[in-house]
Length: 260
Image (cartoon, rainbow, N blue to C red; front, side):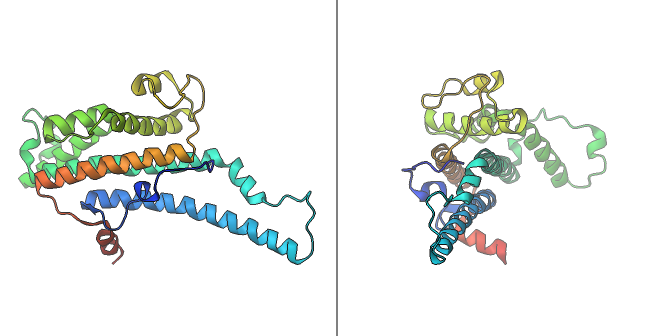
């Protein structure tokens, strides 16, 4: 991933310990942060290796200007596409899991959210002894179905069934859609923009998506997408917790609890 200049404050794309959130969002934040931290660790180790190599050369009096002073940085640049794709894939996966998990939490609090026309084969429920088990099965089926409906289907479900707005403006919606669809073409099409991507994303006011061309997500792009998805999920989480009386704690508290 190219290390371009970035004006976005770090706290906007890295969740802070003081942020109040549900356990579902905390779980996604932890997965996202682990992926982000592993990338930053790689960058820091590469920088230290090059600096150590440079100091060693100077200490031994070898300062030939023709020597390559930053071989590790060059290697990182060579693998920038792989680093970028790994970071994007892991980040999007973390937040997509949140959308599924928060739906489950809301339905468990208010099972009548499930529509009356939900159909389940008798063979799937005949062995269940409690109504709570039936509800869990219906919740699982509903969530699995949502996973294949894309961001538009998820947004509609949140609004129509849960009474929650996922986005506060078109920019949030567009950036979220781009982030998820970029992950999809990375996984399914080698990162190359195809007709399905353009149909789902539409025209971007800031990014030159071109049919048949690979779009590389650089540092500024990633920070922009990550800051947006963190803001979107944080606001959605607050609304969901308030409406359905879900428990919230500081993110740092959830982290400590999961470590213990």
